[in-house]
Image 1 (cartoon, rainbow, N blue to C red):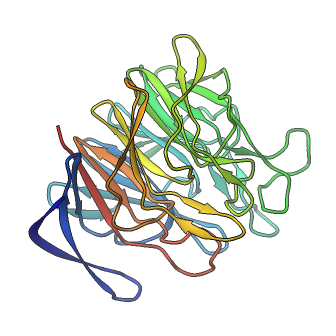
Image 2: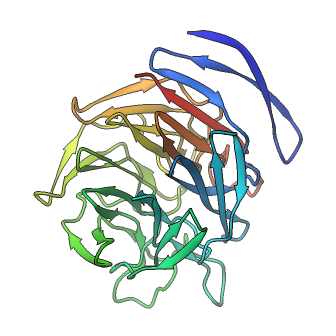
Length: 348
């Protein structure tokens, strides 16, 4: 490991603490810092389109969705605030196809009563060019904390959290019955139609979904409950082949975790951050690992500078961007959101 002499400073928004970080190069790539996120928040979500990074959603106290939309231009290292999401919601599944960004499901607040998470089946297409949202055919299943990815011209949404079928429970909360699902649904953007496929073997939420060579890889996540203090994290990796409508188990991720971010570069899936809780500890991860589907093997990479969960991830070219999120696991009751914008450039 060696360090470059170029240094730069990032200011923490809330308390004006200044952090100085060097650009650091490793055999696998280079970590650096980009312009900090202007409006730090937990549970932000990311995607990339047309050479830019987009950050969506965010939560404020009492589970109120922020509905953020920000655009980052890597060329001039600047953020631009866009119009709010058409439907402010949280734990939405985002992915990109054909220069457009697609958003599926998530949670909203109930119209009356105590704050909780109401699963929705809304589907949207966001056009970054003119900053507009278009409503699409709704998902067959209302769910939040699912994951989405595009492959072979179709979009796949997998996993998530639902309320019990046949019950009068309408919202997800720590003291109400709810469950994770392995539900897999395919969206055709040309016909604006949905098809239900073979469910994922390991029902989970807060997972990552990556697509490589036409196949999907469901990585990590949270078992059982939607809430980290009540659930168990997993390191399970399962591969889905759309051509055969079949799943198989692959090599486990080195670090079991949920609420993670990542992306695909050069046929490998990169996974960063996440959170964990049990009776002894409440923590976020700096962990950064890559999965090579061709070798069915994981590589542990140099960690992120700032550990956090619920951050946005996106890929432009050979760079992975990890934006904002919380530096502590959920439930502190404190503002622990970070403006940090970490960039990893993959070596060729």
